[in-house]
Length: 114
Ligand SMILES: [Zn+2]
Image (cartoon, rainbow, N blue to C red; front, side):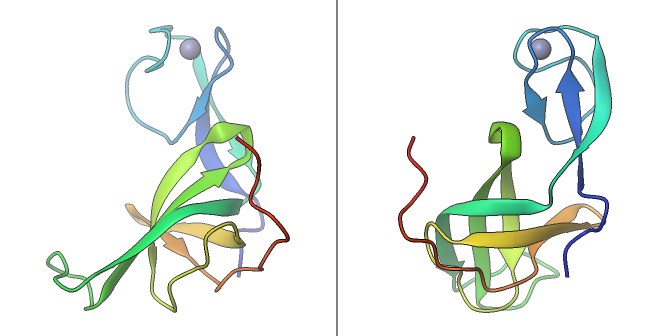
């Protein structure tokens, strides 16, 4: 299940960077001209790992994936299912303060070029 309305991010109207919502000024240029916007809740898996010791409140093994959504927004997400494959495209959703990989991912022919 993906979020029908996409992921909420912050967009800077000065330098046009996009990043996950956080208080304060743009982390890239320091502008206060920041506004909320939505991007598609799809992201490419850049890295994934499995931890044998989980933080409090999380199941073991604890699987984490570094994702890149549109406009270069990077997200550290928890994968409750299998470890997603590198280069695959997954759906992502926000659950309170945690981002979740909500499907195993679709294998792609080749990773996205840098
Ligand atoms: Zn900026």
